Image 1 (tube, rainbow, N blue to C red):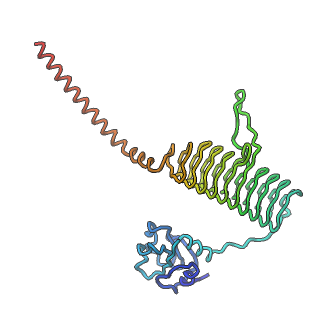
Image 2: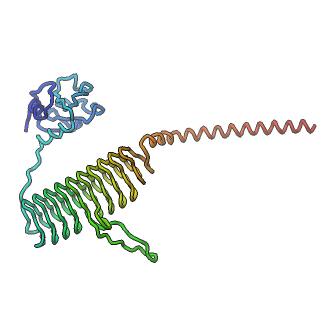
Image 3: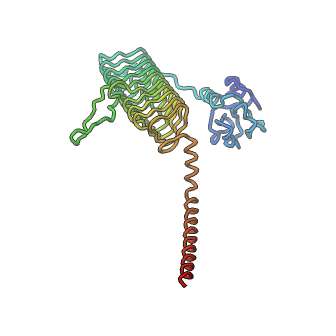
Length: 360
């Protein structure tokens, strides 16, 4: 739908600069935009990406004067949060498709003992086991397996080929993406007479309200008790959470993060890609772990850790800067060693001469 910049500005609650009569019909990235598109950048450091874009932009009202568009007639919408405004504009031009009410497919298996809430969609090929409870408004996509005695809250979406093992508990508004596996046995074994004996895992997994589980992510069941993913926590694709972990609220982990068993976290913990956390570690509230950080022990609240083994950000920066100087330092040490050897040789020569003179 074509919309004038003035109309969009009013929708976004922003301040208009430039020509508000220009019409636009979509959002786009700065690199692919045409004059019919509106774009944004996340920060002033990215304003160079807007060079050459003739169309409308959404800018931070405090820093917009640093943008190349500030001295042009191109329409600008000035807001406090450009990303939030851009998302609102995106939903205006690209509204989500309305949810279709399809009911229970005759090609799905639903055990007679299962309890299915109103307005649920269960697609062909899905399997709902005995004793399962689904709240209202759930969407269970093709190939999903929900094993015995799982309990799902309201408005849960489980995408194709995800598996929920028996007894898993899922809160309201949870999203589980394709091929995720929730509630498989934890990786627990003990050596008995030279062979690995499996340790039974009789616990469960609890996904609290508003959790999102990425595609291919795995959350293992506890040996006893529950592995808990706290309210509002978001796990990217291919994240591994081992048995008995207790994750706080509103954590966010990027792809390929791996937590060993019994790790605990506070709230609002963020992990960049490929972070590895050893068993029984604790990550404090508000902490951030940089990409590929290797964590053992305790990360205090509010700290940022980097490196393998990981340490506080400032220490790791100093270490990195020092390591960059190692080749130069090695060369200098070599020169110093040669100079010392030359001095030792000269001293020995002088001593030899003195000894010879004394003997004469």
